[in-house]
Length: 619
Image 1: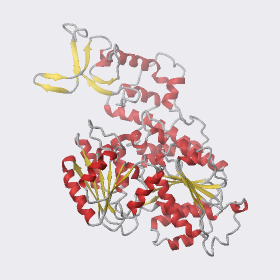
Image 2: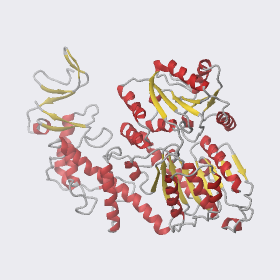
Image 3: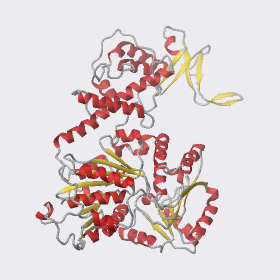
Image 4: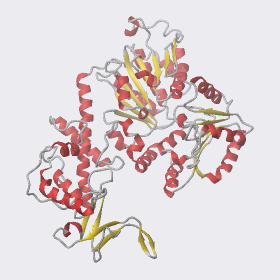
């Protein structure tokens, strides 16, 4: 390091000691202490630490920002009317304090102001979109007549829960309204969302309109097709399946005394019977058209991108939209990602379900886990084994693939029949495997995470997840939802390679609770919204200052302020551009001669503007 220092330099070094004998730091931050007029910017105060590149020093960059803020800092424009955000610094003061706080507590206050600006702008876009829809769209009359729902519920074989009944009342009210329904139905795994969807379909079909039902995978679409065929055939309701590999048109037999003498419905006049079309992304292809579309249902909607959902909706003229998810949505995401949807929650599970117990085990305990599974299979139960990959195992990381694990399980369970299921299998082979597993002919189903939604086999009571540390908590909770659907006690066993204490602690959350909302909150806090959602899928902007894992209070405040602005006729910042980005790219240079405010600042993350961190410099 001879190039950087001269004999006699006073040097400030900070970092994490890797050894104390002798005292050693690997890759510390280093600054030469200089006695000049600028020393008060760098020493004896909290200072920003910026990401650097070769040839650029902290001292030079820090001084550049100090002088820039001194000259231009007071001229940062306010995006909102005066007095909208009392209790927080002005925008120009927040920008200055973000870099040079007098106290670390002030850093958080400045971040909150800039985050609130981002959230207000997002809420303005969400609420404008909802208000525009209500102003220009005339809803289709899809409230139904009960001529199909009554026999459907009578033949169902079980009673709806109070939660399902409550949600159906919300949906019927929306379908009968003069404005198109935009509703999100949230329900934990096994809460009975599919039955609610079926009743919604029948309301639209009773009213003479077609229904499109989009699922994220072929396996789930085919499962729904089988379920709705079983329910709707006795009612005379046609059900079609359209996926990338299969197109099936099925005309159901007429229900005696009901569909044999149908009412004269709008679609009947056009020469077609109202029907349900179930499919995957094939439904949004240009070649698929569904006239007289009254209702769109999107299952496990977080698996679809925003543009994909809009393409399906645009195949009709403002159809009603019902969005369903079994992945509980943390409150912060509910107000941002789904802020333009009305929310219904199915918060009750059907009676008669067995308890699900969850255990976290290490790789060394796998032989004992196999012995336990053999015992349960001998008792007549069935099991799932899930691996993260399809074909290529990663010997370096130990990630298992189903195609290679299949041979190992055949040796470990020679007396039992093992099935293999993953997304690359031909549709006919997937159908055959799933049918055999439902019929009890396959004892152990080895699969990828493709089974996380849709499969319903009450006799399957064991879920073994290999390399569980590779999955998100919400996804593991979905996988766990495949068991516990019958009266027998069920067991979810998560086998993981714990390279860090954090990995073990993360999986302990699943041991401690089966509450999907608590799990989703923990998953969001641990992984962050980008990994939790997938930014491209969610359509959310990448926030520079806001934190979707922790800023619930700010988001709720922004929602109220956005409504207040729109009620007052505010026509300011539009959708799609964060206030910080718009100011930095288009604001004209302010007048010189002003001094920076020096009281509040932020320890922004490395991916956000401003300092990466702050430290208190001292000799």
